[in-house]
Image 1 (cartoon, rainbow, N blue to C red):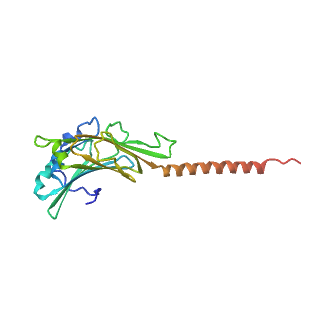
Image 2 (image 1 turned 180 degrees about the vertical axis):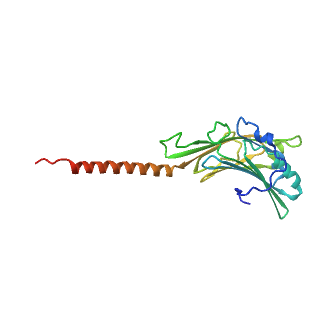
Length: 246
């Protein structure tokens, strides 16, 4: 299964869309994952991708034995994905006794709109002198324990949540401020990878990347060359028409 699948055609929608949850304002961007999902799944992967225009795609994918199919569907639906998502859809596949359920959340152009949960983007409007556009993603991740589950069980079983953050350009910094990740975050080009220990209920992550403004620089170069050409042409015309001394 690929780590990130950007669906062009929406799959089967969630059976019971929670409109109240979708419209509820968020103080900060927070992902809440039921511990039961991590405990009973072979692997749980969360991927958050920020596109250059601020569009955000989040995928929560869980894989488990088909015996847990019904429960896996419920636990995946119980994930609080945060934000005001314009689109949500669900994908499911069964192969060799393994069930994989993926929930997708898509939000368009939230950056710099005043929302605390939006990706922070410093582009040419905010920082016109820089040759880079800077992207910053900050988030609180919480594992929700139920009555029959506890952090000690997670520690004994060495359960982890795999979390990918994909940003435009190259990642320049990635950190988990709670120190609960298993070792430092791994970065590769535009992606940061965290392994979050399920025995720790709260995690805070921040990822920063930068992308060269090549189109912007090309326009500046064109304008500069045009100005140089005009000034040079005017100087040459003036030199040709200036009266000569006899």
